[in-house]
Amino acid sequence: MQPQLLNLQHSKAIVHLDGDSFFTSVEQSIKPYLKGKPVVTGKERGIIACASYEAKALGVARGVTLREALRICPDLTVLPSDYETYSLYSKRMFEIMRRYTPVVEEYSIDEGFIDLTGLRRIFRTSYEEIAMRIQRDINRELDITVSVGLSLSKGLAKLGSKFRKPHGFTSIDGLGINAFLEKTPLKKVWGFGHNTVNLLEKHGLKTALDFVVKPEQWVEHLLGKTGHEIWNELRGNSVNPVNTQEKSSYYTISKCKTFTSPSSDRDFIWAKLVRNLESAFIKLRRHKLRVRAIAVALRLQDFHQDGFEARLNRPTTSIYEVIPVVRGMFENLYKPGKEYRATMVVLGKLENDDTRQYEFFEDRLRIETFEAVSRAIDETNRRYGKHTLSLGMSLYLDKHRHTDRDDTPCRKACLLPGETKRQRLNIPRLMLSV
Image 1 (cartoon, rainbow, N blue to C red):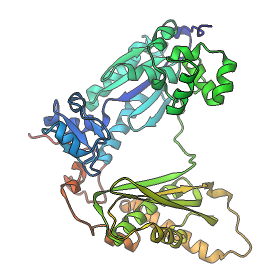
Image 2 (cartoon, one colour; image 1 turned 90 degrees about the vertical axis):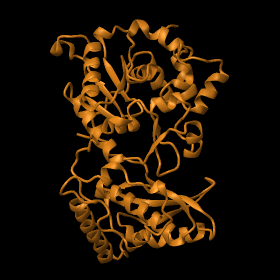
Image 3 (tube, rainbow, N blue to C red; image 1 turned 120 degrees about the vertical axis):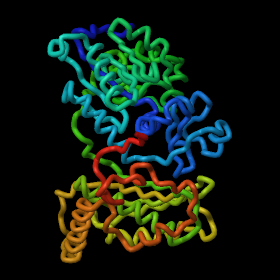
Image 4 (cartoon, rainbow, N blue to C red; image 1 turned 180 degrees about the vertical axis):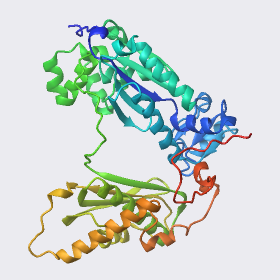
């Protein structure tokens, strides 16, 4: 049985835009002298977070250590990650998309879906031309490139954007689905993990086309609802609409911080863990949630990781109620003399804050006092910058060995007149010599 063939002109028109080596592309945009040179980000972690296409061409890949990357390419430009500037570019990229339609989904910092269905009449041109206009606008205004996939569903559009990189454009209409899926291996399909691919290969499947020609009942029995949705998406049946809503539901909230240099200092490592906890609780309160379970982990320099999880006797929004619990877990995890490279906090068992009920024997005055303090801290940090007010353990955050990996990102190091370390304008700074 062949996939049902749909006509793009009379069905959905979904676009997926994917930034090409987004972090390094932004760095090359604000630092034009880096264009055409091998560039990587992730200096503060000691591991490549993003590599430019010039670096990839020389064999430098994401996830390798800086030492290995510099061995491969001694002329490599290594930069600290400037997430503030990347976020600003991301917002502007999505603003350009929304000039054409409000039906835009921010899938990640450098990926988005757009529903163009029905816009041909408004723009008096084809869906392909509208998508290419968006691509050209992003390139012209932000000086970065994106790859674009256009098709009948999100699943097919995402495959299309990955097909030709960088700065590629791939349109998959109903008549072209079979030919495209025939040359798409299972591991490239959005939603298929390693275990799913192994399972399908055990049943003799090799390509995405092998998967979509299977009977619907067979797919649903083997892979359940998720597999059935992927099967429909690959056949051109759009079952996952473009979601314009900002993400508001969370199963967990996690914060992890890698040190710029490994440390065995108890106070410094504890301070880093507490800072993760503070950041997690700021996000928790921003989304009006409460936590009932907390997990913490310490990662050694050799990447071995140990952790503990604790259940709270009541859900809370206040870090002050959980600090004693977290301290106890830390003391059991920390091993004197060992060098650590990262700390992690995960908040689980999240509940909506508007469904609260007090227990009969709870100290309501104490709970409300903690919540009032949290609100005051959130308001102060909103006005003057994140972590302007923080726990006293933050005084130990500078208690570590400084190396060249402690370089400050460009946006924080080169302040505009009137800006401070905590307060900056929401604009990037271009490093131009005039």
